[in-house]
Length: 296
Image (cartoon, rainbow, N blue to C red; front, side, top):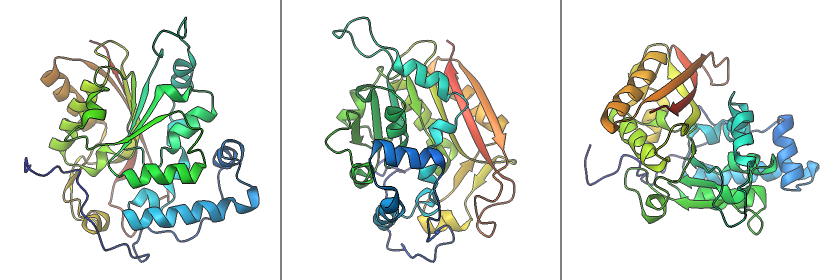
């Protein structure tokens, strides 16, 4: 890795054509939980909702054409689909014995995009002051306020930062986070960069048992470098590492050895059905849903 250039740096990409294979032009419907979030939290009229979301998505596509934006995946509210969500939400709702004490549990959404999962947590009762959202692109964070219409009311803390070159805002959180949510994030990097990210996550987490990393990402039945698919070429991401169950566990064992920590790694490998158009996804593609808890 070139030490002068972070692999997370995003150069301006003129290829924002709507002809990309992962660009779905129309938003036909919303899940019940997404609709409830926008109607009840953001107070957007039902008859204006799809048009509103579509307009924000188009602005985001011009910033950078990530597949999660082109495929409307940000509307999944993926943290709420995680098997650990009820337990995480319960932890976040616990209040300190007195207002003078710090928050009981803190969560950082790393690579949060519009911070849609943080809005879901707030809507479900988590105190916004305990929540942090970080993305490389400050424009996405700003669009999040427009998407959810809560610029003057959202108490969560949002900041732009590069995980490979932490700024003051990220360094200020080191050792203060209990839970890190990292969805659709690690899989856009190679093995060595994923190791670096995991080490940075450990620095951010409280150095104690129970500190937690969870999320979901694209994986593959055959673990290894994937560098020749259409999305990677289009996004200029180079070679990325796709995990299976064994390689994801091996990565965390390696990170643990490097940092003097030990982690309980729980991974579920799921068939992705037809979420992704078959002409640009790779053979053996799967979804990994993971939970990694510090035990030592």
